[in-house]
Image 1: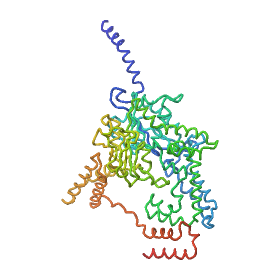
Image 2: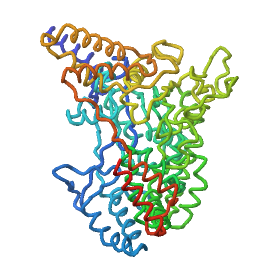
Image 3: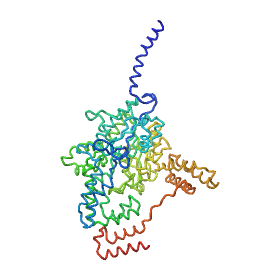
Image 4: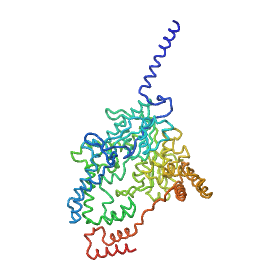
Length: 613
């Protein structure tokens, strides 16, 4: 009886504790059980444009397939057979008559058909024909295929190993979706992650377009809007990676129809060369002359305007990529009609988030969040819009936007001789925020002591720079790096690189070679190349071109040994370049039908002369 009473008494004493533990871990999926146990904080990746899978579905909601594969909606679906069927007739009549016989209308219809699954309605709601593939659970619960997709976009495998994949989440959203709806979903996602992990704070890692989503989160969930609580207390760290916090000049130019290729002189000499190999570019330049100059440019203008007016103008996530300085004029141009009133109300709200971005970030930091930024520079914008060569960028987003205000010389130039840092944000006289190449002054950006720069790194190859991924992992998983001066292995200014081919391909292949089949000299040179390659990828401080040279040297010995094929060199544009430039010099941008008879004779003389060479 005494033993029974003792057991009952012990049970009664332990019951409240058991109930408390049960309540605390109810719904928690992490192995650590929650806050205060593992020392880690769950991280939510907010990916960039096109880094979430959106698949085409039909009216019944069933997936649509092309050659057995689900159709990805980004950036559109180009059914070549359907496009040819719609365009072939008008194109032939236009060519025969040298007048627009339905060609422009047909091309505008093609735009509608290719983008219908990405076209929002007048309320800004995304199309029902695009189904987002979401990840409402941690990476630990993802299938291997899902993991491959996520890590393929943003290879934070190191963080998954350090903190556990049950502490890593991927917030998917439709790039052609609604900004406010996306931000609302992100807030709900944060709350879900907190419940599932048992932690009361999260890290967020906004990447590229994800930077605009973060802008919206810090504005709409600042506690200043009725019905929307403040998210600041839920944020442990914000690790920005090439974020479009003030849009991209490319999108501003597209929305303003300030497009480089609408200048015929540039279209026929420069535009295509910036996007593809020169031989193909010169061939297209010659082919374009089958249409008269005015007809071609009028068609391009109308099709581009139709794309903006019917597709882009309805998408508030894309409006978030418009630089703040361009927004008022572009909103007046595209959103002033009553039909667009709901869109404008939403884009005006984002514009407020955009203009408040620094104040909101500072408020989040004051509430206890830590913020860091990782950016690229030294790569001109794609030459789509006329801003492409006017300021420093990473190929896709202007440095001023990603860095939150750094001053920089244009690509290929340096700051003026004798330039001294402006120190508008960093007032510590002991800090030097001018890059070693004298291109960037980081003392003017919002986070001067917490922004890391990679020279010559392109936006698209950011995820292929292992240093950036290691740095992001360190910032997310540990507190060792307090600022850009904390760790010499991660200086404020570094060089860009793309090491995925070395790490995942060439080095493993080279190390698997049976060296007993090689001569002593071959084995010595192979081992030297492997050692140099491993040394190159083993450092987090890149010397300009070091890893590129190591890859070239290792590839060369593998080619010699027959394990790799030589990289194909671009075809010599030769005759095509000569013909295209001769046409431009003698006939300007006119089409073939606009040439005088003597000009046609000279043209054929040049062609046959080039062919003879």
